[in-house]
Image (cartoon, rainbow, N blue to C red):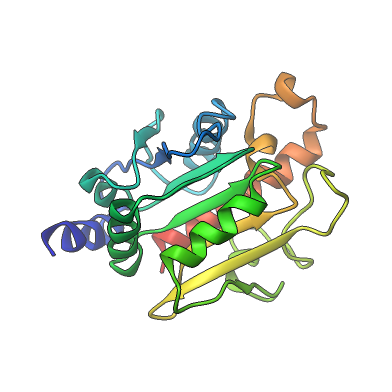
Length: 213
């Protein structure tokens, strides 16, 4: 309970002090370390454009660690298998129901693995696709069509799915978009500037949502 209370206090006081966000180091063999420049670039963009004060270097945290409660936003990405242990499930569930936010961004190839782990995490709740009218697509940057398409992958439309806790998004799963690749340094994926800008703006909307809900 102390950790949960601390997390809620940290989220509320974001405007008063510097915050940290973290990358999730998971088991299963997937490359959790993919996109090493993504979060630093997103942090820099948010600090410059939406008045956040997030520490420049993201932390790394394991899903079963009590340290996860120190971060209002944790990011999970990769291309392959993800496995949550029973300890991971219990800890993540407490974190998310207590005010935490997990953003899972499929870096292509994760979908067939992560959906089962999400169901283990929330067997009593279903992933719900967010409509383009949801507030996460409205501010501070407008995305009237919903989640932007950053990389083609299988050519499917981009989708944002969510698990809710007490009316707020606790888990966000972005699929067929690959926001993290768009956050990377320009030379990594050679994305056009306007595509990277869309990815960073959408990332800023996610961060804004967390710190204002």
